[in-house]
Amino acid sequence: MKIILSLLLASLIVATIAFGPSAYNMAATEKHWSITEKIIEWVRESSIESRAKDLTVPSLEDAEMLAQGAEHYDAMCTVCHLAPGIEPTELSIGLYPQAPIFHQRTPINDPAKHLERARAHFWVIKNGLKMTAMPAWGLSHDDQAIWGMVAFVLKLSHMTPEQYQSLIRSVQDHDHDHDHDQGHSHSHSHGHSHSQDNDHEHGGH
Image (cartoon, rainbow, N blue to C red; front, side):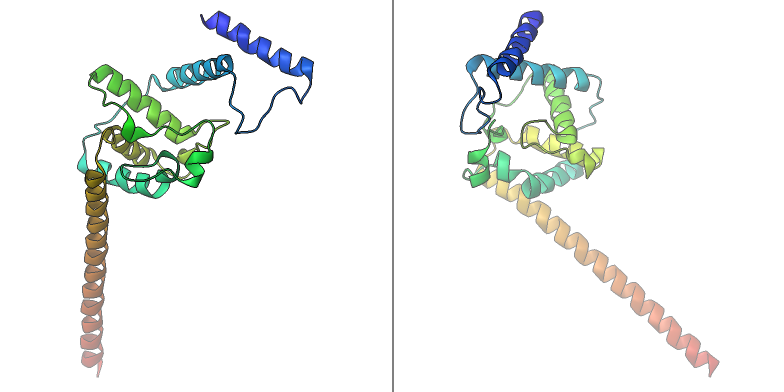
């Protein structure tokens, strides 16, 4: 099967060259031929599988990791991949190929397939995909952040809009409380230091 698909891909390339640059319409509004779609899908899936198969998947049930993934997904991914309760955006409508809509996917119950999907998601998020709008987030995010996004994406299957919004709000509230606590601690430390300086100056007199 792989040999046949490789030959078909080679034939497609040769045919495109033979008929000239105008033979193939590169417009995103002009969909691929069915055979072209099958070849591209096979090449993409085979490439991802071969490069992701040896990845070690950490525990994806860690609450902190999941919260971090939710925050990143909401900020960076919803414009293309959407989320429960979010209508298609102008960008998502215009993409070809269309970005996968994760919350519409059926949950994976097979542990082996779940790990396989996790590895594939990690590789794609980190490295991006050529000839799509998928960027390589690994250039700006570390592996821990990417595994957090993987954990959240896998949780998205059949999530309701209410569940999604509740999770995002809880993450935002946690960040707000964390920032507030840090600011209060810094203020207290600064005030203590100022008090010590006054005592020192008073002793010097």
